[in-house]
Image 1 (cartoon, protein in one colour):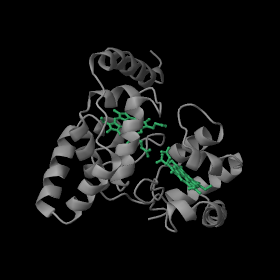
Image 2 (cartoon, rainbow, N blue to C red):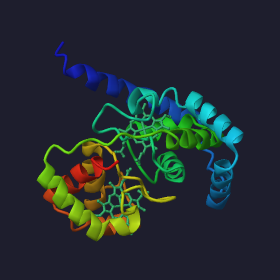
Image 3 (cartoon, rainbow, N blue to C red):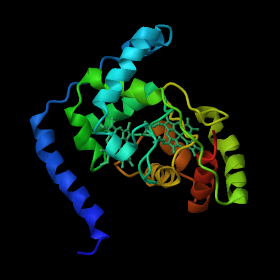
Length: 220
Ligand code: HEC
Ligand code: HEC
């Protein structure tokens, strides 16, 4: 068999397997945002509770490591790093996959098996890990992306691309993933919609997206 077909076959198999999984599990929504926020804030000053949540999150994330890497740094350009991402944002995205507001062939099925407590702990676990910057291949392109970023994006995602509570960290993220996320917002694809972000992506050209992505990946 053509070896290039092997990953494709594995992915199709996973998608097939996830269909019965989705049917067998009932999705339980996470507690209200204020409650999640209060718990996350409390963890910051409670080291033993933080340690317990991280350890439980690591156990619950054993399957996620196949794509997102053991320490939340993926080796696949189209799979996002989760390391260093904001915990509240991570949980919000898992919940969006779970209830259908965000769609992806793999993620939408996979998260259905997670209980609210596991989703919380997984988010705390990944947020606690460091993410390494990815040096830009074309320095001039990245520099122009940096200027565009400061003008159009830093107001929400922060001057260093670290995001906030519910706005994604972009620093150190994979190029391929950033490009596909930005195109999904721009093109209004059903896979990804959020009015706060979609407005900013509408006017981006492919060249803008390439420059922004290469700049953002290179940020520590
Ligand atoms: C088969 C590979 C695969 C596995 C296994 C997997 N993921 Fe993903 N994950 C992806 C891909 C691909 C995306 C990007 C989807 C998109 O483009 O919207 C993603 C996106 C995400 C995101 C959104 C990140 C962001 O920056 O917005 C989160 C959170 C996430 N995954 C968590 C998990 C968790 C938790 C598990 C384990 C239960 C898991 N993933 C297992 C492939 C995978
Ligand atoms: C008004 C605030 C706002 C502005 C301005 C903004 N963003 Fe966002 N961005 C968001 C929010 C909120 C999200 C998360 C949306 C969601 O849940 O899908 C997001 C998500 C993203 C994501 C997906 C991250 C991930 O991990 O999946 C990328 C990439 C991104 N923004 C890049 C940019 C770029 C580049 C610009 C400037 C051209 C920009 N954003 C301007 C609010 C903003």
